[in-house]
Image (tube, rainbow, N blue to C red; front, top):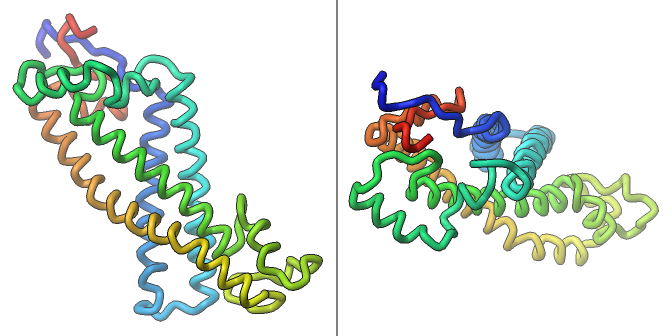
Length: 236
């Protein structure tokens, strides 16, 4: 290793924990979501579909709690946990991006400008997935935080909410149910298109990390495991 570089702690334990929990949760959500989406092709029964949706929603809770943890950390954390260090919204970002495109700076302690843009996009679509997913969970299998509200909105007898079950018409007002399905329609659209957007962005993110590692030579890939990047001494 060159004497002109030094191991510098960049990614805290909190950031690394969020990142790898996020990777695992998204991978599982994609797998289960694709199975649900193709349930007819796989010959999955109604009971099987309900089970898969329950698993999907349970993983979604882990994903949502982890994302909420990251959002809070962005406001109250330290160093590169904070949004000001992670997102491309500071006043000098355009100049920073131009310098990066021209190759004037090949070493960044945190994310390079392209990385900041990618983080902003990924977080935006993950937030859309979380909000739309929670609404869909409430209208589909009547899970929290909105399940109780939607159960009551479609029940003929609100004293027998236990009869409101997925794919069952017992104690369900047909008109109220139709109105509920209409209400959830834009959330379904948002969920599907943000899912496709993430499917596109995630490989681009991985490719960007590989290309940045080749350019910066700062142990960018292993840094999300160890927390340390190898940077010129003046970057410390």
